[in-house]
Image (tube, rainbow, N blue to C red; front, side):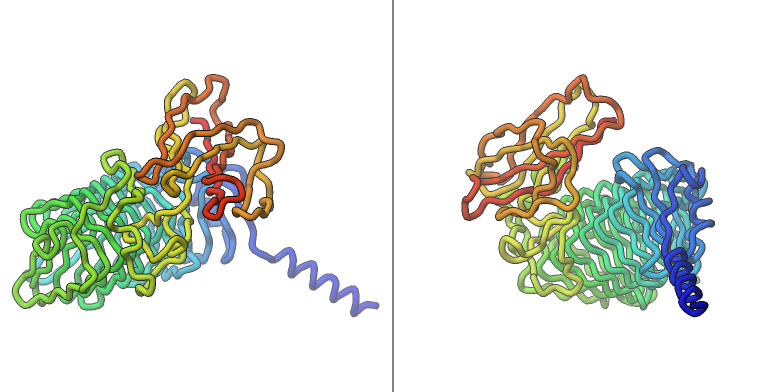
Amino acid sequence: MKFAACLFFVILLSIGAGAAEIFVPDDHATIQDAIGAAAGGDTVIVRPGVYKENLDFLGKAIVVKSEKGAAVTAIDGDAAGDVVAFRSGEGVDSVLEGFTVRNGAGLVVWMLDPPNQTLYGGGVLCEQTSPTIVGNVIVENWGSGIQCWAGSPAITGNIIKENENFCGAGLACFDAAPLVTNNIIHANIAYFGGGAIWCAGPQCTPQITNNTIYGNSAVDYGGGVYCHTDASPELANSILWNNTAASGLEIALLNWASPSNLSADYSNVSGGIGGVYIGSGCTLNWGSSMISLPPSFQEASAGDFHLRWDSACRDAGDAAAAGLPAFDMEGDPRTALGSADMGADEFYYHLYHDGAVIPGSTIDIKVAGWPAAPVVVALGAGIRHPPYSTQHGDFHLLWPLLWQGALGAVPSSGILVHSATVPLGWSTGDEYPFQALVGPWGGPYTELTNLMVLRVE
């Protein structure tokens, strides 16, 4: 009897010792306080809001994620250094997910004689660590969006934009081997080289797969990617377009201290090899499946990098590429409608919107699908967990529906755009779940889209 009682007590202790969820600001007023209180395996969940902090993960294998996503949850570094730092041996189980990371301050400096490199500050700093950085918007930092000194971080599904630095305004890598997948890297500015990505050092071997690298600029070298000093990145299934620099609009390989090398295949590079600057002794391995054709984004000028149906990048990627992600940056499956696409977006049935959800304002509801397919959008009374399983995929809305309406047929571009006015009766903080049916019910190519939740600002 005593043995049974002791065993029961041990079981209770084991259950109680499991991973915890810590909420900010409910349990701790700041994210850093929550990190300090967390133990390995815990999850810190951050409610919507703007948090003026400079975070250090303190070497902990924890998940720090927003509750409602990057659109409504920001970490603001207040120009006081790096916004989020991994500098104590963090690994893949240290996760930063779903934030807008902004207003960091720092720089990358490279001096040739004597060779010396200083790397600090900016949006996210990874110093000899290998964390997971997923689903964030990393914007308006001085000192690179993400900086990696050694280690092998997993950098996936992020939007890295409007950051400024001397080198590597979007992503700076020194002696690091990050897996860089499904990111949109655009409108970053480097005042020397590497508007989007900068690579240096003999151990610098990033795998750059299924990224969209668009509209970045460098004053001197490599508007898209800039490599030197033994760096050897591999580029696959990616789009480099409309980047600018004095030398190497899209890619620049330099021989500083030692030559650099780059291997590229199944990617779309503006100008082809003509968009690459190759320094003395450097090597460019240009695969036979490289293309240079307009990528046909839905609306790049507005930051909408979804591929259109007629895009030359659709089904033009390598389904066997090293580091190929199973899903695109929005969670849509790769290769479901054919081969892998190039870029961060995989053309697939998808419901999304552009514009701030403010009562009385106009937003664009957008649906990707087969041309000519009819589209019906529905608003649910809530979200069902788990979803209903149907012949056309999972249905996430609670029944009965609050509203449904036909939006028309998908045009030849593959993306239907419907302008709508946000109801005046909606209030800040309210959430409204939508889902679309693309194609007629019972049709052979009909599919339910993802769940889209409109959150009122």
